[in-house]
Image (cartoon, rainbow over all chains, first blue to last red; front, side, top):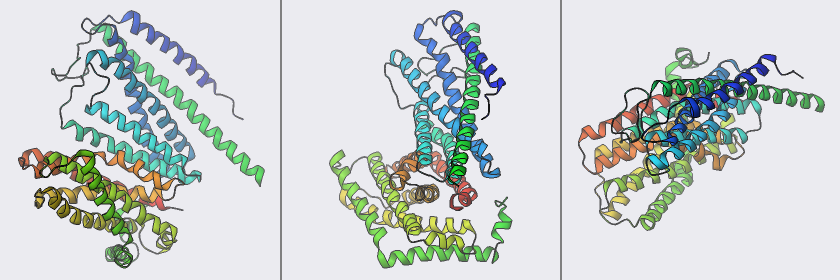
Length: 232
Length: 238
């Protein structure tokens, strides 16, 4: 059996330390937003986990293309791992968003393009997981997974666009925001530091988890092969 | 790579052979349907039932607003469409037809386009019957060429993705429940654009308000036909 790589051990420790630092920055370093108060602090986690969710789906689609081109199982492991991680992070993003929206928009939920698209993304990748669980043959499972990851990834921007043609109230904090959006604010330097730092930390968490999950997938493949050998 | 278009189309018989194979598959589907009529009649009865359920659920009155009409129509088409897609692929799979098609020396994408065109014809036939029935029941004028264009574009997008996904779903253990779960989240852009486009035409809006949705439908159709063309090989590969 492969031992856990040393580099992965080191990455684990770094990830935990960075996450502690990020949490400290969110609560101690970043100033309190005057209008929204403490609830605004959820923003640093909310945007960072939404970012990881989308990054994961990009990785899944690219790994899907990689699998279809090469037929190597490791690509499939990466694709599955990154879908699983992204689903969790997107759900975190939706829940943290709701916590923020309740006092600011006075509702848990609104049919805004960003919220709706995020939820549809979760549904697409839940369908991806169900598709995989319905197929026994590992090669076919990998091929179908890759195809669906690609289709799902491409349909998401079109979904966003189709809902976008209506109006939106979701604030755009980065870049030029629509001043009509409710709950938008200007970031101070300290807020910007905290925000960028938590984006980086969440990306590192993603890499760490992806590595773990991909390694687990590889080990599971090995166990399956050993079992087959035993039967022979 | 097999995705080299020139090499693929120049497979046995060249471009002519490709279209002959495609036409043979479409013809086979239509002839089988003309003799049994099991698919179309199921889709039609189902579509009418959906309209009746909506009548009670939403208390539709004659002369309901354009947005409700287009919403009801598209939900009906989408549900009846899933029924047709599952059925048309399941018959291929169960009777060993798909294996026969795959063994035939024709390009795989000809099989995809053949099946997709067959499914498209079924959807359009359902639409052609549902539209007059709906306009009689609710006293709305649905004889609007623009609306038909939206239905054609929407059906193309729906069928392009649907044929690909149904050929994946029939190979899974949970196939009957799987297709809607796979299909609906990825065809949401088609459904939104088609509903908005249809209600624009029914409500007699300005063309400038309808164009964004038509453009979206055309984009979706082109993008997903291209993707299905590239990946269909991997879906039917044994």
